[in-house]
Image (cartoon, rainbow, N blue to C red; front, side, top):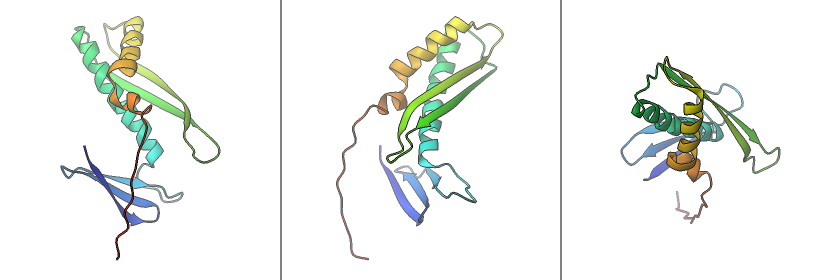
Length: 133
């Protein structure tokens, strides 16, 4: 998987996959239009876990009328302003699913199947290059 992120302005960037799918990144304090990187981390986490939870509920032959995942991240006050904790609230609308079932599936999804949750533990390496304009 490869993502290329391109400068648009000091606080705006565009990230593009090798397949051409794009997302805008917006770190402006005012007139903000898109999500900032840390907001995108929470969005990626909730999107990843939502797919896993919905599919596992349906595998149990239960109805998913709606699934909402609310994410609240607590961040450090000083740089780097990384997450010190993330709390997810799973709200399943279903006529036949049980709370215990949702709890078990949510835990399993986060601990075993969601690649974003697992990636939050990963190490990051880098290299650099400067080209003349």
